[in-house]
Each structure stands twice: as structure tokens, then as C-alpha cells.
Image 1 (cartoon, rainbow, N blue to C red):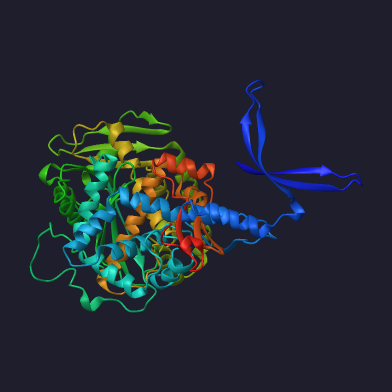
Image 2: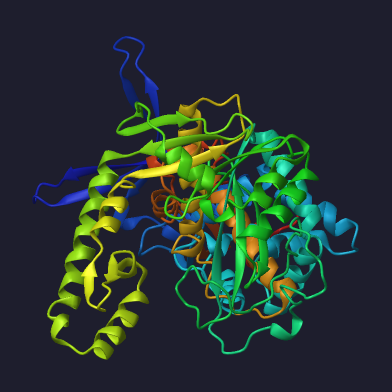
Length: 585
């Protein structure tokens, strides 16, 4: 049934519009739809619009209140009721993140942990989710700015507003319950996604604070002179800011060290936070011990060459564990040098990657796999040629300088590792290019050396596994750049720093699950979801919050992730004088 407008032309040539209530019926002979007039309202320019409005409101009494507001809001601009848009907020990213948050069991884990600590579970869970959802937006904000973001700029189901005090209280609870939550979330995700944890990839990074002060007063001596020579000592997890080896090239700023373990699919299993002066050689033992409590002791650890000490290799093999570790080429161990010197034939694994297996000593137990990439070899050769050419320019005409001037120049050049590798001094103190070192360096072009005690993996499997360490590196890029924005971090308390890092971990977990499910990058997923808004309309009957129509791209994302569509209407607040406010409706 609909309102039909018919135009007729008068004798003077003017047009007149007539309105009628009509209903389409199918003609039994022709099968074509035909309009049947139920009631004629007469000329459109002479119709009683107030009476028409009363009729619409009368009909709306038999509709759902929200549907009634939408129906009565569709009047003409010169009519009785014209809706006004009073608010519009993006909701797509928060909606999808919330659905994955629920599916992955994170909300349930928080509720369980809160129940044992006499904390109101629902507000805390919603506040923590809001902080995680904020990391998934285009511009992650501080906790204080995030409060305004929740109140004015985004729709989060179940949370209209939040204070900065509520955020800090939620972070304190999160830090206190962190160990319990990490384990619960891991097993929930592992069961839901059927994660393969036979291989775990681990890597570390550091993140700095823009401050001149450090937490050195809180640090234990990293090398106490107490006679303890235990090589198996493990690092203690703590978010203590101090100076250390900066992987962000900011040794002038205090930092913390962060470790991350990911699966072969790129799902982050867990993050760890260590004091800024913690060595990679010690923290891997803490990581293994923590995951052993999750029954993840019989796994193969895939690690970069920064973890390749003998003590670490021995520790990783405890309780049936294993490893695939990159070995240093320059300055390799005795066994590594022996492996590189052995002759053998390469075979192609995939694309342009070639591998060969070398066994140095049957009693050693470890196998070595040498990988060679011809494209990388050409790049390494080009870089070396540029370094040698630049070094040649630096030492040109130095024979005419004094011995002291040459020694000063040599001292400055040797502070740069790239130059130091190819610089030598003659017996007379003259500076020359070390051609023997250049030829020796060319032997390493495009190669990397892998070491493992595992006897079941093929050389191809070992090479592919180490190449997949890229997933951990990709996780760091997403975590520290525009995707998650780990920093700047303005917290200074140990528990809140750890809580901030772990909230970023949950954001990365949701991001990676979405990417795997959709088969696209988070940037593209986020851009599409940001176009879905919740619009609040004001009419004479009240305010109604209604989402926009789903676009094909948004439907595709929800379908790929097997998520339900958001409800069409989220809220309705009738005015006190509206017939829809009648409690009998």
C-alpha cells in the first residue's frame, strides 16, 4: 500500500497533482501489476496536511517505536516533521573489533578475572575494549584524549562515556590479572582458530621514552659480583625504563625491551616486557619457561642470530624443545666456520632461494643449512662496491700527510664498522684497501647460515621456517607504526607500562585475525569499515540512532569473518509529549 500521485493537465495547460491511497494487484489475465485505488485524497495543493500527519501518527501507534520514528521522519520539507541529523559517528571498526573481541574469548576472560577480584566486570571490560579499539583507528590517542574520543567521536556498544580515572583503574586491574588473562586468551584463540604451535617465531625490539630520567634506582645489578656463574640465569620481566642497546637508534633515551612470540600464521601468542638493558641472550630463557607453563615446551623455536649463544641453545632443548637459529657469518663459531668451508651442491627450494645441508661433526648433534639468494648476493656486492669506493675517496692522497694525521684519520674511519672491515695500515703507517678482506667478504654475498638439532625437518623446511621469521618482524612494524602506534607512551609506572604494551598486543591480535579472515590488509579493511556510521536523527517524536546502509565491501568483510550485521536501530528516546512515549504502546 502506498500514496500515489497522479498529474493531470487542465484546459489552460497547467498541471494539477492528485493524491490517492493505492494498492498494487496482479491482473489475472495479463499477469501485470495494476494499481487499485482505495481512497482519493483529492488535489495535492488543497489537501489537509495536518489531518494527513495525524493519520500517519495514528498508524505509527501499531509499529515498533523506532520504526515509527523513522516512518514519521520521512515527511516533505514543507510538512510537519522534518528530521534533523544531530550526530554521526563511525562505528564499523569498533563493531567488527567488538565482535572479534567477544569471539576470541577476551571479554569472557576479563569477566572471569574480575569476578575473583571484586571488580565490576562490565564497566572494566568495556573500558579495556575501548582502549584496544582506539589502537585500531587511524589515529590512536592517549588515554585522556581517548575519553573524548569515546564520548564524541565513535560509537562503542555499551559505553557512552569514560573518564581517564576509569581508564587508569582498568589498566591497574589489567596489569594485576595479566598472567591469568594471557593464558586464558591464548587457549581460547588456539582452540577457536586451531592454531599450529609446532613452530614459534620469536624476536625482540625496544621502545623509548621522551624523558631524561630513567628508572635505574629500581634496577637490580645486571651483572652482580656475587660469584654466580650460572649461564642459565633468566631475565626478570619488568617494565623498567633504562638505557640499553636501542633498536630504534635512540641510545640517548631510556627504553624497555619487548619480546613477541608469533605462530607461523602471524598470530601473536604473547608479548613480554623487560628492563631496557636486558640482553637477548638471557630473556629467551624467561620466554621458554613462561610458555612451558602453557604446555608449549615441545616446540621448535625460530630465532634470529642474536639468540645463538651456546647457553641459549642448551636451554631451548630442555624438555624436548628444539630450535632453528641463524648463525653469524662473519665471526662465526668454529662449527659455523667449518660449515661454510665445506663444499656441496645447492638445490633450489622456491623462487630464487637455494639451500644445501652440511654436517660438520656427527657427535655435535647440530645440522647446518646454508641458504643463498642470488638477488641478495647482487645487492650485497653493490653495497660493498659503494663502501670500498667511498673508503678509497677518504684515504686518497693520505700518503703525503704526516703519520699523526693518517693515524687520526684511521681512528675516525675505524669507528664505522663498514669502513673498518676493509681498511688496513701498512708497516709504514700508510692507509690501504684490504683487498683480501674484500675477497673474503664476497664469499658471504647472499648467504645466511642456519643451525638446528632437529633431525626430522628437511633442509627445505628449515629454510622456509627461518624465512617465515618475517612474520615476527611484520608484527613489530604493525605494532610500532601507524597500524597500532605503540608509542608515544606517557606512562611511567611499571604496571601501567606493561598494561599499555599488552593492550597493544590485544589490538594486534584482533588486527591479525581480521587480516587472515578477510585476506586483505588492515589498512584496507579499516578504510572500508570507517564508512559505516551511526546517525542520530531528531524528530518531534524523539531521537533515533540508526546505522547507515551496508556497502558491498562491508558486507563482504562481515561475511568473510562470519560476523552478524549490526542492528539497524540502536537507540530511541521519545519526547515526553510524543504519542510514542505512551507506556501502553
